[in-house]
Length: 399
RNA sequence: GGGCAGGUGGCGGAGUGGUCAAUCGCAUCAGACUGUAAAUCUGACGACUUUAUGUCUACGGGAGUUCAAAUCUCUCCCUGCCCA
Image 1 (cartoon, rainbow, N blue to C red):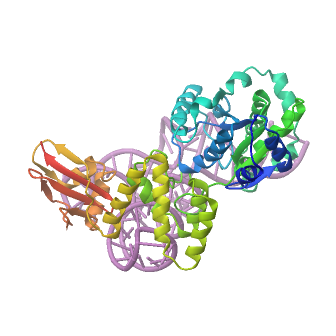
Image 2: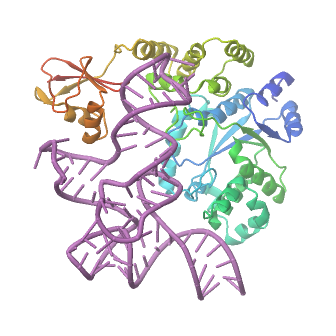
């Protein structure tokens, strides 16, 4: 028996939530006190989680803390097909092995928020592989072509004369069948998943189950402030980013996202977030709140101490344009080498050509002195400090 | 099954035998300004080096024509539209 106050129920169904389908039903279920089976489906096509992924994980955690059963459902079958969601191109298929490997890594990162021992982990190949063609045909009959075409992204593709493969229609069927297999009471997902989540309801009904309720969470924009956070856009804050990077990335988000990030990526109470919103409106410097945001986020994924250090680092390097305290020191063979090689070979630039350009553009400093001659040789018998651009530092010394 | 149109750099999209490493826009990077925000301005933006009107690799894959091909021919693969 799970006791949950009405206040708490309302909170979990509102903060960072876009839509709850059959809200009244879900409220009743939650109030009743029965342990619910709550599903999150994951296609582990990549293994690097970013804080956009964590929005829904945070919501799961709330339910977990309330005592409900969380089922993390990995699409080791569906991932081989590829969900068309948000992709203008069909995703490339991954092998089952790759997917399972990714899933392991995924769990490692989810652990930072969820109590993984209490989570039930399932793999959908377990049942999807066993379906016969007849089963698939029957599943397909739950939907009409017109219904499938309602999906915004299919419409998008059609209007752009882009291909849609038959198998992409099957994706929502499989995801829906997953809900049947685990008898989900509630499924969570991003708003871009709404169609697939709804398919679960339809299919559960076809299998004489009570249809699951649905809770959708917002899609978090990336650090560029416009596009969905994602690896391909390179606008993401990874869960395993080092504290300094994480803090720096938070600082680079546009001001108008500060409040949204607080709501979706931190544990700060809503009342406090409202105060922040008001303060920014009243003309307080948003930077201060962004720093707070950075600290909160780094604290979640690293520690309070790391957060503090990251902020100090930021202030030193960017606010005061000084060289940070901690710069990696690399020991090199020999006593000197051309500057260009030094930059390229130590990952301060992706190629020698680019290293040359950076030098020519005045982006490179040696011991805090700007260097613009690309033929410079660097003697590192004594320690030498190299800075490329604003944020890349390296100290080198001969062995 | 028939007809038509396509496949170019991270993306969009020019180019239709040499002057093409390929106009332009977006993204990216650097510099200026700043709060590493946004906006704005400037520059860079395949790689390598002997930095040169240099070398190599690239316009779906392969083969060919030519002194010369992203551009022409053949073939294969992929996609969209229309008709049946």
